[in-house]
Image (cartoon, rainbow, N blue to C red; front, top):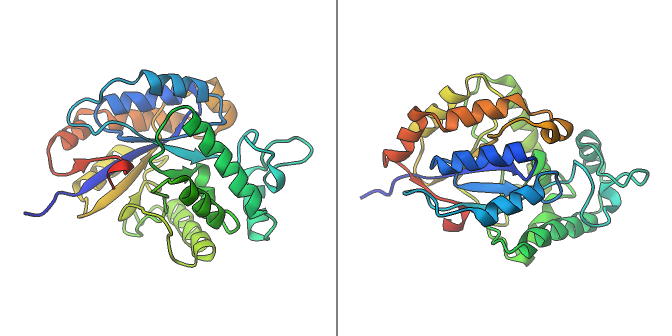
Length: 284
C-alpha cells in the first residue's frame, strides 16, 4: 500500500503583527496551517509568544503546530550587534536591496550572520519553544555570505530542517513575476550552496507562485489536488492588516485573501478527505 503524500502548510511571518498572528492561528484552528515561522524581532513578537503559550490542542486530525525561526535580516534592529548586516548610522538592518547588493559584492561578514542567527534562535528557544525548522524573511538565507553561516548555526543548535525555496517551474509557469523570483532564488542558492543542501528539507517547496495572486484560491486547490508522493512544503501568508503590519511590510491586503481561501469549505474539505497527510517539520 502506497503512503499518501505528506503536506506541511507553513505560515510565514508569525510575530510580525497582532493581526497577522490572529489570522495565522485562525487558519491553524481550521485544521489547515500546521507550522509557523516566527519573527522574534518584530512588533508582534510578544503577542505571538503569548498566543503560542495559550494554544490548546489542535483539532483532529491536525498534527499540532510546529514552530520555527523566520530569520529576519532586513527589518528593524538586530538582536545582536549587527555588524556588516546593519547601518552604522541608525543601528537598523540594511534594507533588502542593500543587503542583496552587499551579499553579491562579498561585503557581508559570515561571522556577523552566524552571531545574529544564533541570537534570534536563542530568543525563540529561551521562550521555551522547540524549534522544528529555520527559514528567513524574503528568503535571504540563500544569499552568498549568508547561507553557509545559517547552515552551520542551525546545525550547531540542533535545528534539523532548513528551507530551500526552489519552487518547480511547472507551478503556474505563466506568472512571469514569480518565474523571475524563482530564477533569482535558484541562481543565489546555486552560488551560495554550490548545489547541495546541508540539512533536511521536504521533497519540494511551493508557494511563490501563489503569493499575491487574486487567483490564490484556484492555485491553492490546484496544488492540493496534484500533490506528488513524498513531502511538500506549502508556504502561505494569511493574516489581517493592521497598523504594525503596514509600517513594516507592504504585503498587506493579500493576507486576508489568503486567510479566506485557506479557511473556505472547499479547502477544508480537501484536508478532511484523507488523500494527503498534514504534518509539521518535526515529523520529517
